[in-house]
Length: 335
Image 1 (cartoon, rainbow, N blue to C red):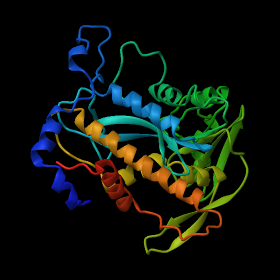
Image 2: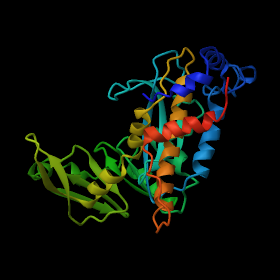
Image 3: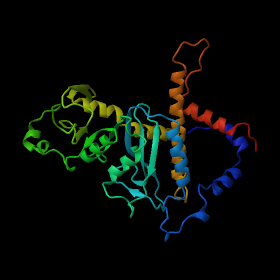
């Protein structure tokens, strides 16, 4: 926990509760009724989502490698967009679709999932999510988008290629257009750890590798090549096993959203409330803090990469940066 003793000297308890009680992100009197066609489940957080989404995209340029994944905001109360995901560490809460830069884990855009919509266009949900996050802002910029098996499919790979964007991800064997040749049980049984088979067609390569239960799909990598990955044994030793190049690239570029979430949790603002949208609001504030910390680190490296005449101040860690951020926001205010 970040303790800031000076904060209590000018921010009283009564003032905090007065602000906390009256904080709102939207005008409740202008909210459309449930019977209206314009009714929006996310009305209470929609304004700040638009502001932050625009700010994130305007203030950061994505690298070539991009990661798409989901994130959960904890919440067990009466939440109209609450989801239940028993396989996740956070089983109940609000779900965010996120896209971020693989090189630094900076979150670039997000969408809050509001459940199934009656007027939603036809198609698979995962395909719509990826296209909404990437199209049209990333069209014809030759980004490589990394995703897990929830999102990836052969159809999505072809669709993104039409937008001038590439796909690398894991692929479930029960997806439509999955190669029949890679479902051969006799073939899979003969594989030893590290062996792999590929099927290529229409500039798409699908790979089965004897180490994981899922396959890999890519329109970036060739069907040939050899690389290695590290595996830790039960006795603690580390061994190298053969792997196709797509595996190493996927492991190196897929974890951007998870890393951003990990940085956020170190000094997260977590406060319970009967208002369902408060935790989403605090989650977005934490993302702002983490993104600013990441951009500070990138700027520090760029500014101090050349020869310097004067002594340079050491780079701040996340705790020091967060404390500095609080002090700069408080300024010289006294109660």
